[in-house]
Image (tube, rainbow, N blue to C red; front, side, top):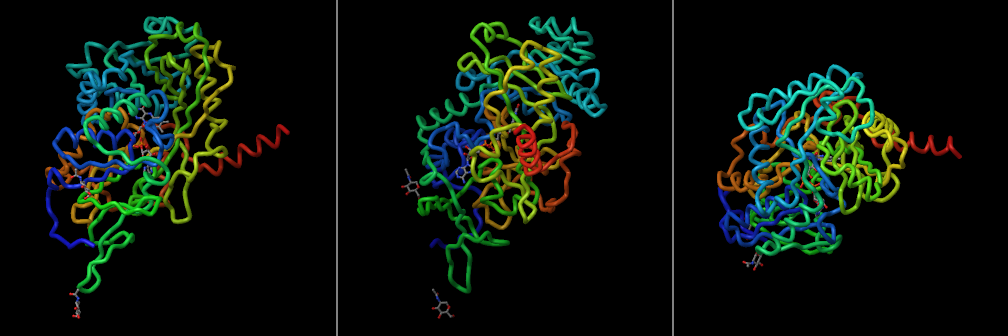
Length: 459
Ligand SMILES: Cc1cc2nc3c(=O)[nH]c(=O)nc-3n(C[C@H](O)[C@H](O)[C@H](O)COP(=O)(O)OP(=O)(O)OC[C@H]3O[C@@H](n4cnc5c(N)ncnc54)[C@H](O)[C@@H]3O)c2cc1C
Ligand SMILES: *[C@@H]1O[C@H](CO)[C@@H](O)[C@H](O)[C@H]1NC(C)=O
Ligand SMILES: *[C@@H]1O[C@H](CO)[C@@H](O)[C@H](O)[C@H]1NC(C)=O
């Protein structure tokens, strides 16, 4: 099909480049490639429209905060926040301030994490002036006067220079912008869904096209979509979020598809107005919430926990193939309990309201929460894997793509933390050890079994 050229370090600016996935990272990559002068960029996306219901950023909001245990990410988040304040991204950014707390019953792990993360900003020249320690319920009420709950034992801090971004609006807005500046989009379950990556493999003196992943040598030639069409490219950039291992099998050795719960309370117009402007609030041992979305009047809540995996027989975890109920439009009982407790402590008038739009949302997790932004080994710089967002990748959307253009310009990933991993972590249940998550990592199937037991008990 194509001759086996020697590994070239950089692709030329008019070379065909394919991006798989129009999520937060795929779109950011398209934007930055275009801005860097690449003229032939095509994004394949399985959904008909952006935001895709398969994107981890599909819902209404995501926390944008700079505090990390590792100062490396604090500096990146600072750059990202500058990006959120530009005319292109600004409409989606809301600097409501960010309150982080633990309750009086928090396990030590949650308290330690709060202090470790606070260290990264409390002396930082940009953030320090906007930080206030909070040690009583009166302190918390200075920033959220609407609280009527008891805030039992709440302790923590307020960070003025953080907040949230409206994630589905940001995805849609950047999608439209990319289309306007000349990025091509191929959308939908047939034309846009990538089923296979195509590789060249050398058999004797002949070069064949194959969809078998090369173990070493061989180039990625492009993609085959669900309608059977083959699309060729000099460089393929794979960014399908939690679905990475379905296209690059070896990713499943060190990246785990994991999901967290999302739930909402439907508010009235008055209730939405009442809560307008509250800081994004993260109670480390229970969960987090945002100011209500003025358009839908939904008040979003997420429990904090280790999340759930869906481990297949080969030891890799992938999201279940279809996003249909059941099993994914519910949240587990243990998460519901946490969220109701969170509401009882803060806004008790909401604590017994029904939870609507319950969802399990999938992301790509790594053991050390480090991203993977690298060439896939053995593909002669023809295939880049963007993976391992570890549940903290959305905030980087304004700048993420610049790291990919840098990678392409340099021809290799110089930062060890973002390199492709060779260790095989399948079957090693490392989910509980992540410092910022409390609890035991469990399997989706356990939850489904639990739920059907609950339903049977009620019948
Ligand atoms: C519940 C939850 C809460 C989160 N909270 C935060 C937060 O507060 N702050 C933060 O910074 N981050 C947060 N995140 C993480 C953030 O959402 C992700 O880091 C980010 O969305 C990753 O972007 P991505 O482009 O890698 O993947 P995604 O946004 O998931 O996008 C992947 C895209 O690929 C498409 N796709 C998949 N397979 C194919 C295929 N075969 N062919 C074509 N297209 C395909 C999908 O349709 C989708 O559009 C959270 C995640 C979850 C699940
Ligand atoms: C982009 O690349 C594709 C695939 O090689 C090619 O068919 C198309 O003509 C190119 N478009 C432009 C504008 O160069
Ligand atoms: C491949 O090698 C065989 C045996 O050496 C030869 O007969 C054949 O012509 C070669 N094919 C090509 C395409 O060069």
